[in-house]
Length: 450
Image (cartoon, rainbow, N blue to C red; front, side):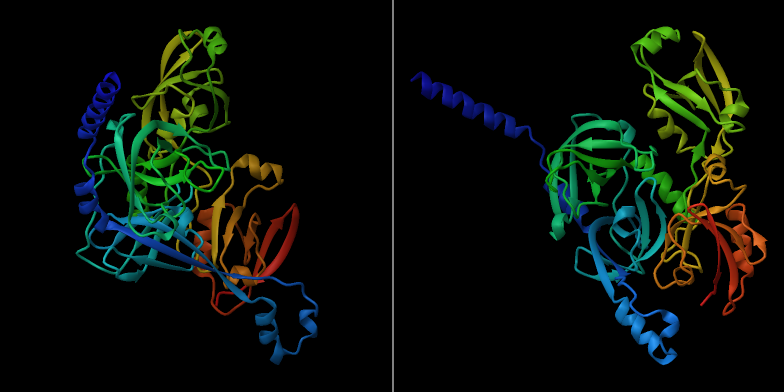
C-alpha cells in the first residue's frame, strides 16, 4: 500500500511540474517563418605539382594545361540565419559565409535567393546579407542586458541540414569570455544548454517573449555534436555590428592601447582592493589612448563608461562597442585610492577595411598592423594581406596570406588610407609594380586589374 501511495505522489509531482513548463508552440510558429537556411559554396583550385615549367608550354596549350593542373573543386557549408528587416537584410555568422563565392538563402516557404554580402565582421563572427525581396517576415531583438541565468530560451535553425528544427534549454551563464585564435575578446557570450549542432550556426536564440536575445555561434564538443555547452552572441553586440555594416560595410571598434590581467586575492590585497575585482593594467602602449589620458601600469579599472568592470574580460567587451573619439570616464584604483580619469577612446588598429564579397578590385582583404608588429619586421609602414580571393588580380600576382604590402606603383603604402587613395587611380589592363615583404624578404611583382 505504501508503495502505491509513493508512486501516486510521484506521479502527481510529475504532473504538477509539467504543468509549470512553458509552451513553446506559439513562439516557434510565429518566428520560424523568419528563419532561413543558408548554403555557401566556395570554389578552390586543387594545386598539383608542376611537372613542366610554364615557359616551356606553348601559348595555345597553356590555358588547357592550367585547367587540368588546377582543377576547381567546390567546398560547401551550411548554416542558419534570420531576417531582420522586411526589405531582405539577413543576419548570420561570418564563419558560415565569409569565404563563399555563392550564397543561397532558402526561406521557410522554400523560395530561394542568391544573397549579397553587405559586410563581414570576423571579430564578432557576424555577417550581414541582403536578398532582393520585400514584404518579408522579420524577427525582433530583445534586451540581452535583462537576460538572467536560468531563463528559458529557444533556438531555431538547420542542424545537420534539417530545416527549421527547434530546441530548448536554459541560459547557463552570461558574459562568457572566449578569446579568438588571435587572442581577441570582444564578445561577452551567452552560454546555454540548448542543443546546438553544426548547421545551427547563425540562427536566432529567442527568449519566451519571442525576442531574439542572441545569435548561435559556437559549441564546445569532443564528439562533433551537442553536449550541452552552446554559446550565442548577445543581441547588444549584434545591433551595433549591424548598424556599422549597413553604414560603412565594416566595423570600427574602440581601443585603449593596454594589456590587462585579472586580479587575484593576493594582488587585490597588495593593490589596496577589498576584494578581487577589476582589470589590472599590466602594460600601457606608448602614445596610445590610455597613455595620453594618464592611465598607468598598476591601475585597476573598476568602472568604465558607467559600467562595472568585475573581471578583466569585461573591459574589452565594453571598450569594443564604443565609438572612436568618444570621451568617457574611467574609475581606477591607484595606490589604494579611487581616481577618475577622462579617456578619449581610440580606433582599434587592424580592423579590416575591405569586407565585400570577393574583396576589393584586386581581390584582397587587408588590415593595418600595429607599430610593434611593423617594428619586428623592421618596417616603418605597410598593410597586411588577410585574404586573397581566387581568380583575382592578387591571386594571379601570387600574393599570399601574411604578405605585407609596402609599395603600389610608384607610391608607398603606409596604411589603408594610402591604399584606398592609390586604388582609385590604378589603370585597368596595365601591369603595375607591387612590392611586398614575405618572411622578411622584399619581393617585386606586377599586378593588373582585369
